[in-house]
Length: 208
Image (tube, rainbow, N blue to C red; front, side, top):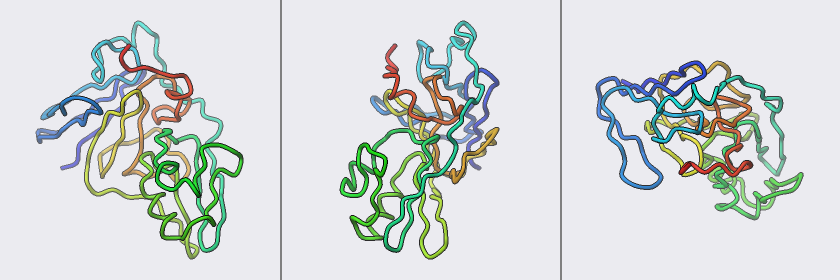
């Protein structure tokens, strides 16, 4: 049975393993085994991260979504079009690290699909941990699907969710994958509950 993820309004993420052994993968340190429900911080101020300690109430945390840039930008190359949705990019930079000749670190045309083979571009897009990158080949748009379930805590970053979990988002962004996405845990995302790289832009430190 898949794990269940539920958003507590203006509060934490309820992660329910529904009686099965399930590890919460830690970026640093030992993974945490879960067998029942856990409440994960998403306001960014808990002193017991990744778990909630009630800090959201003192902070006055609001999970209101104020996103205004939920749209795709298309980058065309021979035989492939790469789509990018900035509103769900977690800034992991897997694309830049794996195929720098195509994925630049900055610039208006930072994705240049024609600088590598179609297969190389596809392989790199599939490594995107937030689902911000998708592609179209032969008239078919491919959105990444993951079969193995995992929840990973990224150091100074989001929760990376993979696999067919039970999660009903208030709204899914354009081209978003239901089995490969990143949830905000810094409390700063304009696209709550999803990560939009606000943690990086605002230099959020999860040790505080």
